[in-house]
Image (cartoon, rainbow, N blue to C red; front, side):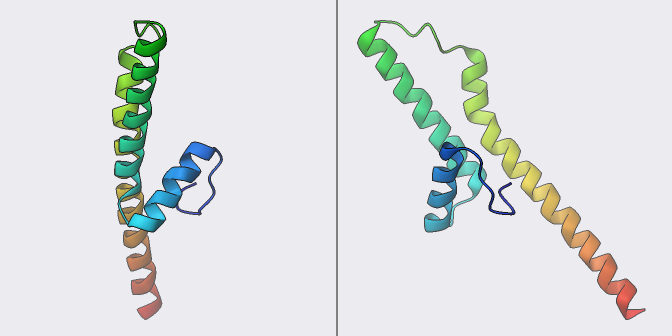
Length: 94
């Protein structure tokens, strides 16, 4: 979805726009944004409830790893595409 510029949810559209303006890697911006949302929800929970009953280890792991997974997947896909394009170019030359 990122490579074809098709974003389905508003949060990812916001991240996509930040990436376009700053030229940072999408996975890094997604990780920072998710962690910022996580921190905001912790602060809201502490402010209004005095505790944070709705955030557990899965939420924290998700906030950290989703962006990094996307960065890894994009790297692998780009390398695979470069390899295929190189093979096609060699086949045309022969």
